[in-house]
Length: 163
Image 1 (tube, rainbow, N blue to C red):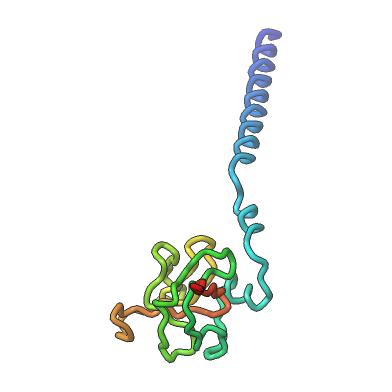
Image 2: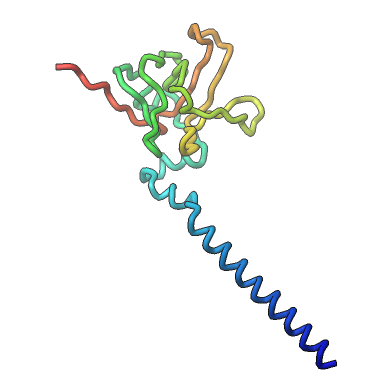
């Protein structure tokens, strides 16, 4: 009887120590992997209105965005993470009330089917900030594509002027 008790105790201690070792390894592995929270802390601070649109997938009122009727030469970058999104040479006046682009910088924008099943949402490929929606088949430009983007989701960086 004493021999069986010793074996059970030994097996229990072995299982317990193996469990602690596995637990310690998991904690070490988690330390090495950067979390999304860490990355978020590197993002730009947003105003409540910017957060409503960029994080909560809102929309600014048509005709109110500062880049709707803005046509200077430069690059539009993500308000949240500063990733380049669009060049000014792809911007056009779609008369829709929002900045419109017929092309994005390669790899900068990700397309996601919208929850309504009718539209396609566009987000920053780097931080997934909500930009707006993309429409195809309207024949407004030769590329037949319109990225309808909230001004609030972007910051404009002008091209450097040669002196």
